[in-house]
Amino acid sequence: RFNEPVTGFDASDIVLTDANGTLGALTPNAERTLWTATFTPNANANDAANTISVNLAGVRDDAGNAGTGSASSANYSVDTVRPTATITLAD
Image (cartoon, rainbow, N blue to C red; front, side, top):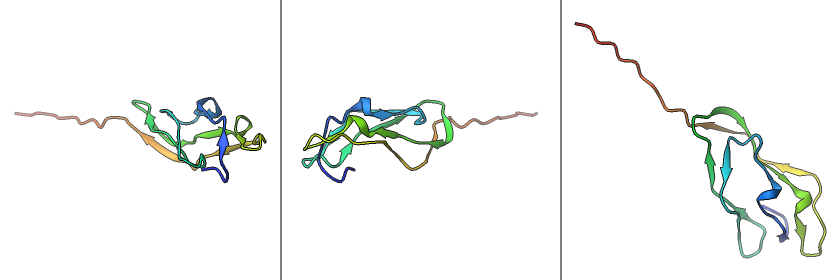
């Protein structure tokens, strides 16, 4: 969520290095302040420390001013490891 309408925001502005997943296409609301995408976690991942960051330098407001720095999500967990079971049979 941005505090004013933005342009130039696309997938190249998103840093997924510590995300353990991928994002689908970014879709803005009519005001271009709220952008959404579907997050798909990586298979067989189990990590309690994950974040998604946005490089704000690639984002501009309607006056053409570029953002500075970066913004990062709160920490979230990813667990896509399938459960396993061991069954022992005895006579």
